[in-house]
Length: 393
Image (cartoon, rainbow, N blue to C red; front, side, top):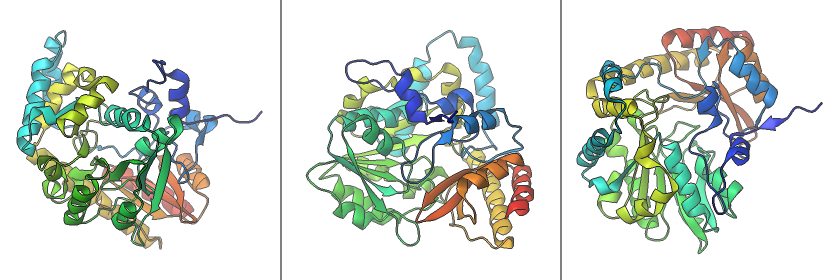
């Protein structure tokens, strides 16, 4: 019997409730099963996982979960305390808490609360963009490879063409080529910075200038899921473009450095008319629980915790770099909590061999090369990776 192949999008397609032409779910099979390897189908950059492999990874004894770009050092003690305390009033809708969180974000970014839309992680907000821009048809532009939520969904569910722009020789987004690719049918420019899966960034000043120019022609969606891992997140962000009135959207999430991957809090920042257009396409703040909202409120801009988590991440990442160098492997220097490096065997085989040794990782295919992406874990997990990797390197 042939092994059936599943992807996150196939699951969504089979499970969604159709309203009019389409309604996309705000969750994913990864969230439901807590499978250690993401199920997102990256067209042309990685392979779908067979149902057999999914079941195997869901049931496997994982010693080092290094496949989902989670922060194993969080959430903070303040967040944990707030979660517990919020339980007593969790029978109430958390309007006050979420309003305060929105106001805090707006104040910090120099914007108005009307420029902020909360969500249960950034995923539902990205999917709102999928529907809003996807229904227009035309084409969208992004780097390749990059995070595939918006590009893949727009091309799979709508009559949208994806213009994939290869990265530069140092694996960064080629902003010049992306801008040149705009035509009269382009409906969206998607930028993931820092980029996933490469972990690379582009010059902040150049990106801001790019956003201001391009947004006069087409909307620009900037995914800043990993921005908190950068040395100066506020300077690296393109929030300034929104303050200037540009047609730019910025997606943020608490799932990474804040350690909220299972708590689900994120937000989208944009001009108010853009957010109003997207509101009917997402539950927004209504999808955030009282407990998660309370934890996010005390965690937001908790500089002491964020610096400690960043320090621990950097220590584990430096250890990984040394392991790779010792085994004679190159890698792409990363500004995130994951590292991408070229491997010397078939990617699927590599992932299976690592899983046999209790280590979950991801793989990609691009530039006629198989790559492994390793999420940064606890030092103990990184040593487990070293032991497994050394056996098959």
